[in-house]
Image (cartoon, rainbow, N blue to C red; front, side, top):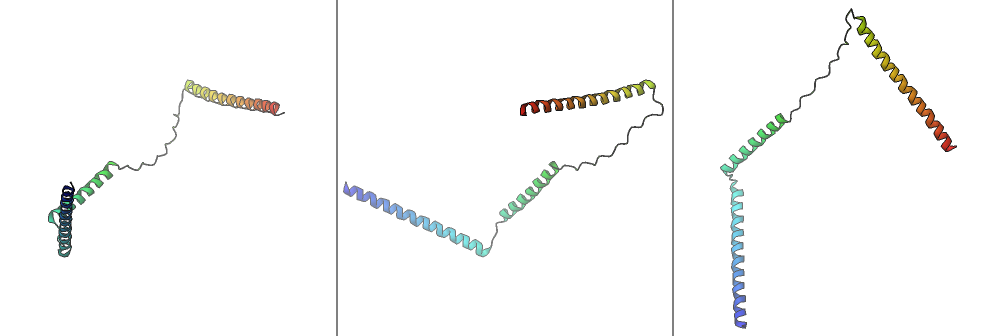
Length: 131
């Protein structure tokens, strides 16, 4: 049993050392590749083409979004000229206009009176409650 355990441990140790050596070699080759690329300053042609295409597409998308979201500035409102009355207005039309104005005036006066009455009643009720 002890011999078997020793063999397993040695096997594990060998695999660990092999793995470390492999990773070290891989890391060194990666570092060497990056160093060579930076020294030579070689840029991949297909990468450059892809970067140019990507920049062009971004610019196109930006243009399209600007066109879609464009909001025109509203034109200022033009003052409308008051409607002029014709020279001759039939009496019935004048009468209807005057009656409408009188009804509106009477309604305003009635609302004012009601408001004043409500205010007086509130003062009386509040005076009784406080007094």
